Amino acid sequence: MPIRFFNTYSREIEDFRAIAPPAVKMYTCGPTVYNHAHIGNFRAYVFEDLLQRHLEASGFQVHRVMNLTDVDDKTIRNSRAAGQPLDQFTRQFKEAFFEDLRTLRIEPAAEFPAATEPRFIERMIGMIRELENQGIGYQADDASVYFRLSRFPEYGRLAHLNLDELRPTGRISNDEYEKESVGDFALWKAWDEADGDVGWDSPWGRGRPGWHIECSAMATALLGPEIDIHCGGVDNIFPHHEAEIAQSESCTGKKFVRYWLHCAHLMVQGQKMAKSAGNFYTLRDLTSLGWTGRELRYALISVNYRLPLNFTFEGLAGARSALARIDEWGARLTALAGSEDRASSHPLAGQARFQEALDDDLNISGALGHLFDTIRESNRLMDQHQFAAADARALLNDWSKINKILAFDADAADIPAEIQALLDARALARKGKDWAASDQLRDQLAALGWEVKDTKEGQRVTPRAS
Ligand SMILES: [Zn+2]
Image (cartoon, rainbow, N blue to C red; front, top):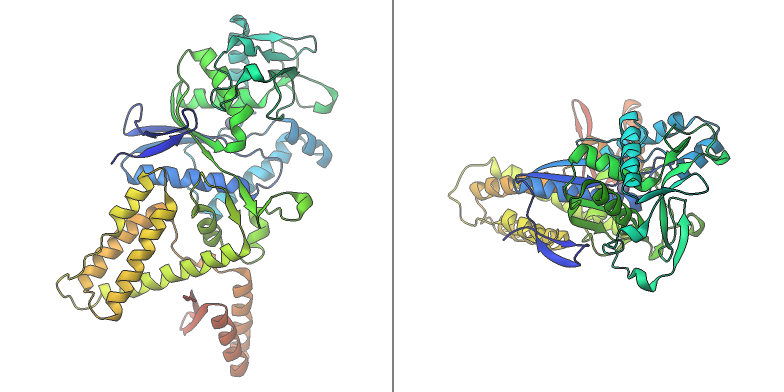
């Protein structure tokens, strides 16, 4: 069965055919580095990671580019409020973003271009010049350069907007505007006082690029005029991706993207995430509450990407116990795999069913369902002593392939802060030979789902199935 994806452009499930297999060129819109990314952003990045890992497990060689938007309305506004030069202000959030990617075990993209790199600014200016030469770009009275929508009749096709029914609202210079407003969008924004000392010289005077042209320039510079897969969140579809198509295709004359994949929204406790609603979380907010990167990865990855994800603390607790089950099962298989051999009696094909589910538009909930079926069935056979060492080895081999996609393995960095605090207290109690306190802390850890063993090297802790 071929890999199939829902293509936003056609609104249909399509077989995936790469332009030049096994190579796959993938562009994913990255963060605007004006503060810490929130878990809604990370849902999209985790989905893109699952997509890349599944394609790679299927034999493709993915070259993924993720841009960093380090100049736009928001970065300028916040850097000025912080009283810092733009590059210094955005650098801290770029670094924090890379740390967050590591926490969530997201494979780094092959390239992370930043909009303000001189080679890209130069390219943006070059593309705008080309659009101007074609009569598509025009400089208005306010000295900014706009894209003339009437010159790109396909505008609105990705978002399935019927532009005839929408009243154009003239020109729009800010980076983000409401879905209902359709107007010529800015390619180049003339400098104004709100920009402070941010600006570049151009044929149209001092100014800065619009957000949309940044992505068109970086994508085509690094991946060429034709891209296999372009991803983002559903809120990127309009106007951002629509504008990317209009700009790129007008400049290159080629079809910009074959497959558009968009990740649905994330809600928190059933509500839209908003600072005003008190349910707004960055990744750091959640790790400081004791949730590990791997638990958060599980919670973000385990709902099919086209469905809204309702992020809850009960869901996180569920992720924790699901991972504990996987850990316990893996430990059990490993112990059995090393035991005396018997002929294979119950081969379980976990991997093939897992991969097939993902082939079907990344059906991760189906794939995880197969995984837990396999866990249940093999646990039952092990309980009945009907599972041979060879079966365990085969299943572990399956699991290591599946886990290349999931990246769910436990590691020391995954010990939550609250657990680490109890471990530290226990180490102190043992140092002071307070065995009663030590035992009490061991029980407390056990109640939280963590098993402590005392070894020559000190305490060793493993999560237990609850
Ligand atoms: Zn973009």
